[in-house]
Image (cartoon, rainbow, N blue to C red; front, side, top):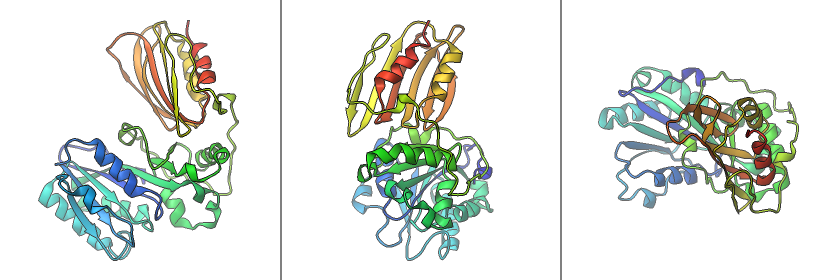
Length: 333
């Protein structure tokens, strides 16, 4: 998959592929993404209708979106030629900045990727990101599913472990450990009705080869007391740090104007439990201040020209903010 990734240019449309089994929540996710945007005039949606999967027409009414539907089949098999032709037509007619493809629940992303790398699509479009929505209760029986199920996970840059409210909450940490062990390097975020931070889908991805391990291979990540749940709804440590808990999801923050030890902070990030899937903000080191954007186990650093201070916002699921903030506070000197 990712060997086909290149940096988008002004002349090419950025393609976002939404994948996942039937009923996993792809349409819900797409609705959320579209609701964040104030200007959708340069966005086209390609929907593969298969059974009941697709876009609610009322959602798109008066939205300014151009919607193309492929029906009566799957875009990776019976409608493969139609997919290519539809994408060619979309480019010729609209030349959009972005194209969202909502694939059928039985579509194999690898076949779609093959189409995108063929001429003339490879000359007009670039794959930006693959997001796979995984229904949490399906993971319990993942060894009973076939290659299609694995391909949908393996090709993803971002996996949303969705509908976590429908499974035993004590199983979620184990699911996250197992998914990360089987698919190293992928971002995994637990979600309820595909509710995610608006910045998450746009986080840049790095090219990586496909490296799906056998599904019986589970390398249990050592548990850390930072990830244990707590009944506390708020904590305070170093400056102003608060937490708000809603539906098991916790948001909290850390602020301090003093210098952060860089080695200690990097170790702090490495030890964060998978349940902390979002952290963003400036971090003040001895010689500079940089902003970190941490999503689903992977972080990106960039230059920060604002106030030299550490100001971090966290989002997690069933985590103990006090213990996390306590460990972070040890890095301040």
